Structure formats: C-alpha cells, structure tokens
Length: 191
Image 1 (spheres, rainbow, N blue to C red):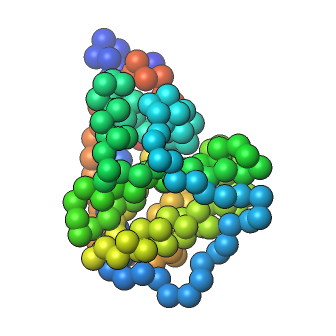
Image 2 (cartoon, helix red, strand yellow):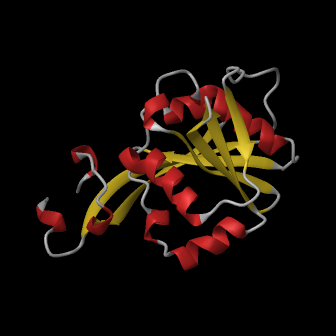
C-alpha cells in the first residue's frame, strides 16, 4: 500500500486522457474476424454478466468507474436504449466486448472496448475494433468518438489512430481510485 492510500481509502492516479473523433466511416474493408469468432449484440445485459465483462477486460487497466456503481445504479444504464453491449465470443467463450453509447446524438461514442486477457496479442483487437466502427457507422451518426488513457493497453491509442480516429486533445486527469476495488495500480500511474 502506498503512502497516498493509507487512511484515505483511495489511491490517487494520474493519467493522460486522449479524446479522439472520426468524422466519416472508413473506406474499404477492415480486418475480418476469424471463423471461430463472432460478435453478439446483447438484447439485455444482466448486471452480473456486465460486471464480469467489465471487470475481466478492465482489471489490468484501472477500469474503476462502473465498479463503484451499485447494482441499482448500473441496471438502468444497461437497460437504456441508447446503450448497447456487443460481446466477442471465441470458440463459444467470451473474449471481449464493446459498448456503444448513443445518448448524445448525433455523435456515437465507443464508451468501452477491450479484450479478455487470454486473447490479448492474438490478433483479434483490430478486427473487433473495425466491427465496432462498422456497427456504429451503420447507424449514420454525424461522428464517432472514443477516448483512451495512459492506464489502457499500450496499443490502444495507436490502434484507434490506425483505425481512422484523429486525436482531438489530451488532458491530464487525477483519479481517486477506491482501494476497496482491489485494482492493481501500476507504479507509473501513482501520484
């Protein structure tokens, strides 16, 4: 436990958050998902299954905000018609997910995106990202946004840029991550 977290119940974490935007759908075909992989849009995502997805994908990347919500707070978010959860399955097992947020039209936001640890590095990330982009642009938004930060996987920002997103701005944020969540906080992010 660091000095900053003793007695306070939080660990202060400094991250650089990069906001990105795509103003038109990418041209051409992107990388295809392998035959043993499919993406399913959930018609209803239960709170426990969402917690499993969010917790497993985001554990190493300090995904903490949704962990602080009670079930009663999270349930209406998942039931909101402006939110959709899309799960990547490889050989029938969950392998990642993305979440699209349409609550601020005409812009569609890629709110969460990531892979389960057991498939990271197996070439699925770019194909899943293109699936998310194509799914979003099929709805014809004016623009698509996403953000990433220095707590995320080191390939996140380069992959977003390679997929056609453009950097808008980067800001420094200080998060007060509750220690009760038990998340591993990399030393490079601790204040």
